[in-house]
Structure formats: structure tokens, C-alpha cells
Image (cartoon, rainbow, N blue to C red; front, side, top):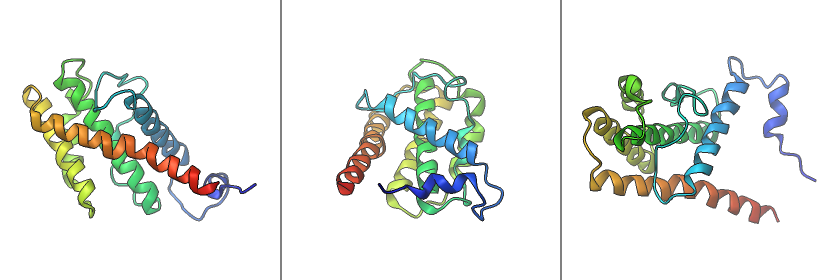
Length: 170
């Protein structure tokens, strides 16, 4: 049996200082739960338990250079999808958790300088959703289409990648 060393090093001296491994795993757990819950839909929806189940300030975790690039990308993109879902909660009137955090979210998202076109599109989508939530506008066809794209690329894409990894390990 092969041992996945990814988690074995978290309990010893990994050579990486200043990393809160428990927080990292909490963020990853929340992203995985978000994707799991959104898998029941064909779009990004926001009627989730923000402030209780999803209680972290995800906008503060968009730039974590202390992890390797794959971990950093998973966390950054997952947090962007989380922020998008939070914005949808306010847009569609299900709640307003993100309201007091809109400015901090927008500032954090605007600071990102992603080098991949796919992530650039995700950033533009999140910024559009944050602006829509802030102004109290109703959803637009553009935002709806972009949110469906995010669902296909990130939520469904997450599960497709897992299946591929399982298939490759057989």
C-alpha cells in the first residue's frame, strides 16, 4: 500500500515555519464541504450556513504563499467560489452574511494577480457578484451564466479531478 506523504509531514518538522496547519485543513475542509453541497445544484447558490458552518474570513486566505502552488491554487480558487456563494446569498435575498464584509472581500479579490485565464475569469465573476450584492441589484443574465460556468469549472471540475486521480491509481 502506498502512503500519501502529503499529511504525514504535517505532524513533524516540515521545514516550513509560520504555517498554521490546522487552519489550512479547516479551510480545505470548508471548500470540500462547499463543493459537496453545491454538487446538488447546477449553479452557485448561496443559501448555506455562513457564520456557523462556514465561519472563516475566506477573503483573508486568497494569498497564501507558504504552501506549494497546487495547495495555494486550491485554497485561493475555493475561497473565491466561497465568496461568490456568499454574494449570491445576498443577491437572491436568502441572507446577508457578506454585507458587513463586502468592502474587505472586494479589496482582497482586487489585489489578486492570477496568471491563469481561468482564475482571471473567476476573479471577474466574483467582483461582478460583489458589486451586484453591494448595489442591491437583482441577478443578471451575465452573472447567472458566469456562475454556471464557475459551477462547471470548479465544483464539477473538483469531482472530475478526483475521479481521474482514482482511475490513474488503479
